[in-house]
Image (cartoon, rainbow, N blue to C red; front, side, top):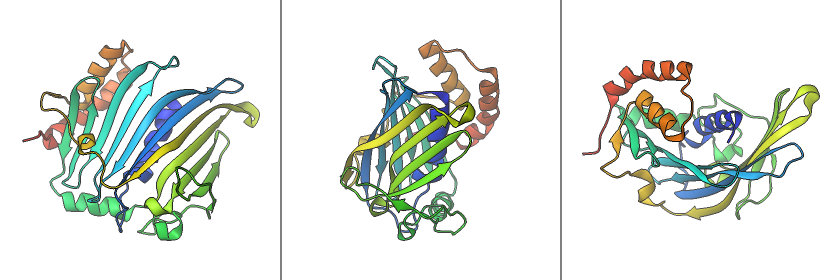
Amino acid sequence: MNARTLVLFSLVVSATLLAGQTSLPPAHTVESDEYVAKAGASPWRSAHYTFAFRGDGSTAIVTSTFDSKGAPVAIDRKVTLSTGVYAEIADHLKAVTATRSPNAAAVMSSRTAGGWDPGSNCAVTFDKLNRRAAPEKGEAIAGHATVKFVEDSASMRLTRWFAPGLGCSELKQLAEFKGAGGAITDTSQRTAVKVTRGEPDEALFDWPNEYEYLSPSERYLKSAASCGCPVSPETLAALKRSDPSYRERAWRKP
């Protein structure tokens, strides 16, 4: 998965999947595959995602990444619990960074207010502070009706499909990146391949007791060492600045 895809996915998650709902969506799990391609080249699967929504508003996002030959690279999870616990788990490293908010109710309320309202066909947030252009009718994806939104800019055309019946879960996303003159240079498409209603697997929200608890900068360094990747001084410095805040709110399983 390239850097632009990672940034894009981060934005989508923070704006949509972790937003929560005033009327909580039905408990469900969405499994999606992502394919990337350069213009004129065959697409290859870069990642598999699992998005899990519990009835109490807790969410888990599992990202399994692959190299261009299909070999697994990493498995990372982001877990947000209704109790105020937030954990970033690197299963391939057996490491976790976990914090807990002192006011779980305030956290849930904030997430709730910013959620997209299914009653508006996912065009308006519950707090009315964010609006999208009127949706188009989308295709049925994994057996669920969707609405489609298109955002076009000089650098990218982003098309997203949401399912109002699942609390505005995103079931498909197509990012088309543009080069000079507006020509498409590469694409990233993530599509739901399976949607399961009902409470998700509890294992998605937990981690083994033997996992090592690390600060954000420690987890970054361990990840870089694991893959033999270069350490970015800018990224490391930014993470080290966040370490004191992490230590104030650090949480371990009892």
